[in-house]
Length: 269
Image 1 (cartoon, rainbow, N blue to C red):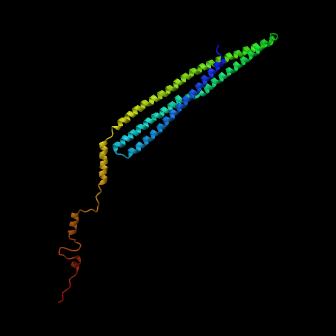
Image 2 (tube, helix red, strand yellow; image 1 turned 60 degrees about the horizontal axis):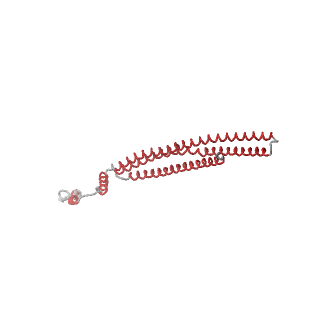
Image 3 (tube, rainbow, N blue to C red; image 1 turned 135 degrees about the vertical axis):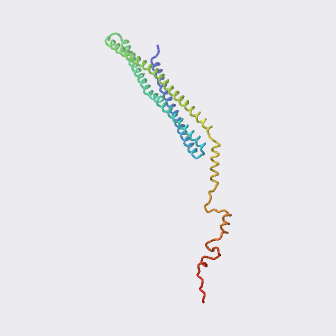
């Protein structure tokens, strides 16, 4: 016959071990989600920097960087969905195990109390019997109390066994469901991520290098050529202008307008 103390000790250790293990698993999943969240924020920053970089470049490089920036943002949105799914469907259900394990521990303690009570009643009955059979009433009363205590032990033991069986079955079901969601979420993200990364890789080969170089060359030539000055005059035109006679001072007869308009003095008779 198995010692009841050994049974209780085994159950207590098993439940406590399960409680600690599930708490450690949940904490690790939380850390995993936090790490992905940090990576997501870093990649959002990378996407923003690449877009700012591309906005100041030539057309081909700008289009390539902007496309990759958009793809990075799209990939991180998929990561955010993965984080939400893992948190709600893999991590959160494990929070209940603190309460579940606590309930099993209380049932183990209740059985221990019933066992202690049974031991005391049995000790009292043995004590009365050792004193002789003179007091039959007390012996019968003690015997009834012992039977009642034994029935309490049977009831507590049956309830505990059923609870432990449900607990073990639920533990396996919940762990399977939690890990299934964790793995499935990771698989879905990796599949979508691979699709986006493949598109990003293909985008790298679409940049028009020659077109960008021609655009940069056109910009340089445009900046190097100064616009024509409105007051600029070639040397030949300047020479012709200087050698041309001015009508403001002489006419065809070589007389100035002042000399031409002065009245002649009348001759005396």
